[in-house]
Length: 230
Image 1 (cartoon, helix red, strand yellow):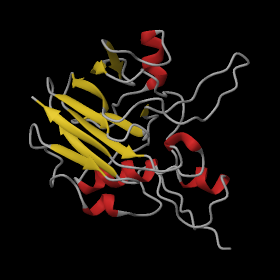
Image 2 (tube, rainbow, N blue to C red):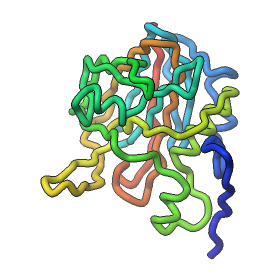
Image 3 (cartoon, helix red, strand yellow):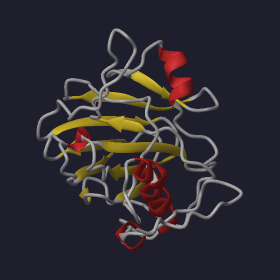
Image 4 (cartoon, helix red, strand yellow):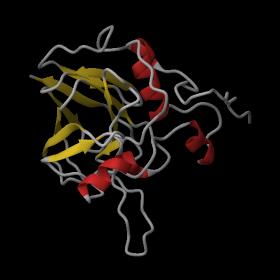
């Protein structure tokens, strides 16, 4: 079996494949209609502009889907939600309602306002990428969250130089007493949502994770939904 050709670039902004994410932005520049519910289709990504003071609600439509989520400073995409910095600020591995979400400049970019789920999310794991699927034995291209982020930004005319650690909403990666981990299905239920309030003008990127090799999406990737609220 052939293996995918992987090109190397000067930064990490280039997708290694393509899917419908690139062709189906919510608008030309990512500006949403306030109050409208949008879908992030299974295995795809979407980018949306969220102005300072606005809130984005991200909904786990079926309860079993992980949503990789990035938050960038809309004016300077080199500043973004960074969990290596956020964990140090919060003294927590997983943020809870009321917690600020910090950037790599150690500034609050957003606040996790509401979480109707049990609060089990992941802030440790990198977004799945082509290399991850190669390591899992996949030949050829496999949709992945890293490319979904890149393509969603490209679809609205933007580019980030790197793929930061995402906020892996509803991803269930328990740390055991011996410090090993497990990869388990979400414990959220259908309709659970998080509300994240922007504290600066942001671009939020979401990927309905396409992982179907290990059980983090119950082996069945599905869509999620989002709404930008005033």
